[in-house]
Image (cartoon, rainbow, N blue to C red; front, side):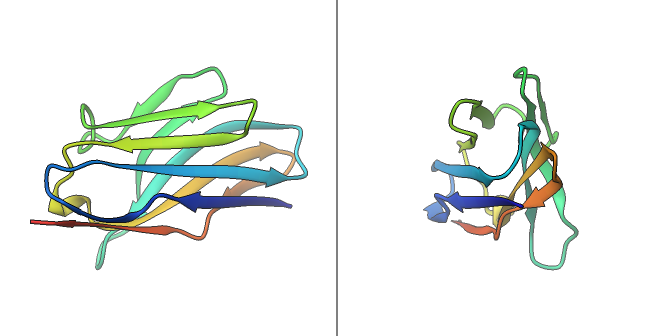
Length: 116
């Protein structure tokens, strides 16, 4: 079983920054991909960014140039640095990891609210 614990959400004004952190623990040999998803009120969940164990990254078009994802393989953590935040970034952000064994796991979510 894999546990993902997120931290770092909160309330920030438009143009501000936040950093989300997610730590994975449990029984697994490796973590292939770690990433962040978000779900805004009334919308479907969408991928924000992902990073492989080798460091390859992928971002949603809406956050490119503003968000940066990184990970520490030794500590099984993934970070999401969010800059130039916009009100439309308001959502619950979920950490995601694909481990071996274990498959896909999700964190409990952390609220990010950007005021205009």
